[in-house]
Image 1 (cartoon, helix red, strand yellow):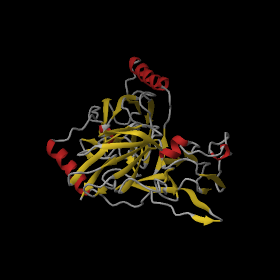
Image 2 (tube, rainbow, N blue to C red; image 1 turned 90 degrees about the vertical axis):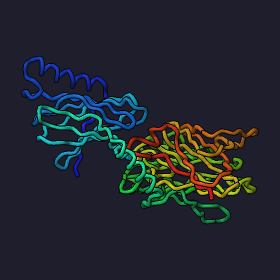
Image 3 (spheres, one colour; image 1 turned 90 degrees about the horizontal axis):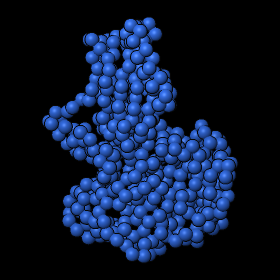
Image 4 (cartoon, rainbow, N blue to C red; image 1 turned 120 degrees about the vertical axis):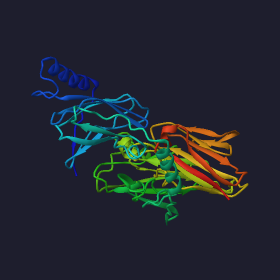
Length: 423
């Protein structure tokens, strides 16, 4: 499918487009007059698309798109093999989307950010019939119940690809060597929903690197993406020339090139992460990230789970997947379960576990001298939080981001939702 993308990124361009339409109407040309365009206002929020305006047959359409939500959104429309689409707009962003005149019929306007359409961000636009236009499509209570039930019954849904598995190093002269290759892959976020992801070793998140304090390591980066990249080891103490910021610490690693990061692990046991630091909004948002754990030789817990949180082109994800394709956290009654939260996204994610409390034991890889108890831990961008949950009641307990638009809509649960299964 070809893609025709119209991207005017200033509020002024939106106002200018509207003023041209107004001028055409005031001069007697009307929305279907020569050189005129029909103005349609579109407001994006979580998780809804609202429109106002008329869409006559055969008249060019000028969509004034505004994101009034708190998350990035976009607007897209498909016709005759072409997708007309705005850029992904941050909160408060605006853009004018120009679409040629359309034949009479019904068209779907939708948000193209992965997972958002499924969460309810689509609306029908009727062209013709006196210029009827679409609005929000309310579900009946019965339909809403059915969609919620079907989503839960599908969990945990099977998808291709599994990220975050521990990467075994090669041992060369006493040095632990980890090989990472960056590639672009079609990544299945949820059933049937594939997005071009940027991935370490073909998976999102990239493989988990686990080391011990005092280890000498090398991380060899091979770049097979069509653009340059780098690796920053977030939270780790490394030599300056190993910090991975292009043009500050190193040259970017260009397509087809390799670079070796070499350092000794100096930090105490804790949770860290690694990610691209080149075109990072796109590359990290599309999946170029992973967890980096300095292991405790004497862990004070019975089991552990790493949950990498992200938001962006892949949607709202836990370990690279959106509900119902997220994986459950399975625990035994009475055992201490360590959960490592890492936020690689650009939004806050307050993670809430039903049924039990968390004991917070570390923040940003640093153990707390005085752990404390809560049931919702807010993980800001770049932060890592280590918590211990000790389940005391058997059953299936909801576990999700408590920014509700990141987890649920009238179409059911989506995105940052999983469960803890207590056996």
